[in-house]
Every structure is written in C-alpha cells, then in structure tokens.
Length: 332
Ligand SMILES: [Fe+2]
Image 1 (cartoon, rainbow, N blue to C red):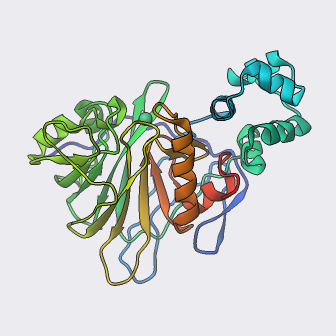
Image 2 (spheres, protein in one colour):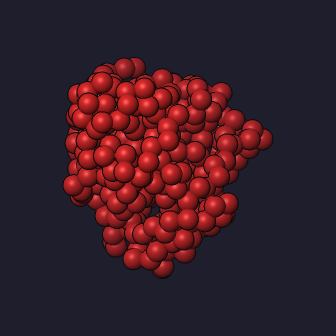
Image 3 (tube, helix red, strand yellow):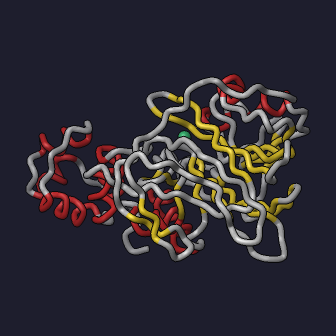
C-alpha cells in the first residue's frame, strides 16, 4: 500500500517557555521560544535518526485543568468560590479561558484543588515545559490530524530506514490519516488501538483493509477484525516488544502501549497514552475520573523518567516532565 506524502499543513505550536526540563538522561534541556524541536538524536550505540517534528499545542488550557480538578474533588463553582474566597464569576470566567488570577490566588487554587502548584502555575503563565525527547533507537512518526478545535495524534514506530512499521491509533477516518501519512512507510506489520473513541479508532477498519492486515489489536469490547488483547499482555512484532497496560477511565476499556526495541540491552521506550494523560493534563474521565488519575499517577510513579510519552492529543512529552510538572501529579 502506498500513500502519498501529505502536503497538508500541520499546526505548529509556538513554545512559550524558557524553563529547563530534565530530558530523562540527567541533562537539563533549555526550551526556548521558537527553538527547533530535534526529536530523534544520537542515543549512544544504537542506530538513530534525527527528525524535526512539528509540535502541537497543549491539549488543555488552564480552564480545562480547573474544570477537571473541580470534578475530581466534587467541587461546584460556588463551593470552590467559598473554599478559596475567589469571586464565583471569576471562577466561571476562568473555566471559559478568561482568567487574571494573582500569584496568591494561584497558590490558593492549587491548595484547594490538590494540584501540583509549579506545573499549574506554569500552565497559567504560558510556560509549561514541552521537552525535546531524544535518544530513541528507532523512528517515531507523529501523525497529527486536525480534530474539532484541536489535534488528534496517531503514530508509527519503525526501524530506522524501514518501509514498514506499527501504527498506533488511526485518527477519526482513513482519509485524515492518509493526509499525514509518511511516504517512507509503505507497509504495516500491525495496527494497535488505544480505545474505541471515534477520534482514535475511527480509521481502523479502513486502514486495516488498505494494508491487508488480517486484524488489528486493541481493547474490548469485541468487534469484527479486532484481536482483543489481554491486560498486561506482552507481544513481539518485528523488531519491537509491546507491553499492554490496562488503563480504564477515559473509556471503560482503554489501553496504553509501552513499546521498545527488542534487544539484549534495555532500551528507551515510548508510552502511547491515548486519552489517559497528555503533556500538561489528564484526559477526561468519561468512564471514571478517579481511575484516570490513579492510572496516570501509577505510570508517572513507576516508569523511568526518560520514557517518551506519545499522547493521543497535544505534543510529545516524557514521564519525567509530567511527574515533575503535570498539574495532577501531586504526590508522585
Ligand atoms: Fe481523544
């Protein structure tokens, strides 16, 4: 199957931060506004490829985070106003992205909502750190597609120089995916789906047909052409090892995939998070809010800092960055 290179513009984010972040390898990376975003760089002895990836805007703004945090705490606008002493109309405005909180009020809100203040503050002040992940011993293609007012991401992992790979999620439809398909990938070894929301699995059936895949892999519920993976299953496909991590919350059945290159030496991995968490926020708990938070915190706590995070929306990040800055990472 051959899909052409896209000529469609990809939204690029203007980095708004001058913070430095841990790149997971003990180095601090200065992230300057407008700086190029090198992605795959030399990772030591492993073959690597350098690419420049357009960086998507953050998925959530302060108003989204505020609303999700209030829902998690069971606080209404009026209850939060009483708890913080902040006028309810200013809280309503903030949820609608109009905010002018003072430094003291940001501290008060963070305390009242149990948020990680440095990250919440950075988000409000437009300087949330977006890291420049590097050191992967394989290619990661970011397929960012416009969706609603934002962007939804699918990804391909492939050996450097290979014309085949593994597709993770497929956007809302095959046509949208085709617009951003990399010309170098002409075959697929497998297609994994994180969950069956239409913006993540909508292109699955068409893609499977176009590439002649017997089936794709994903969580339940059972559906034609899908092999439902077991929770915590591990499987090897081509050069890659895939670990299935069950993370219900955004949907009743939702998987994250931890993918690394098979080798004798442990190598850096990419975690595909679907709607569980993003750079600077967590996903909506359309099935269970608490479960979203618990699974996100479990991954932030247990995975290595240098694990690259490839979320279903927004820019790439790392476990280390989210552990340190995500507004919901309090206690991690
Ligand atoms: Fe989504």
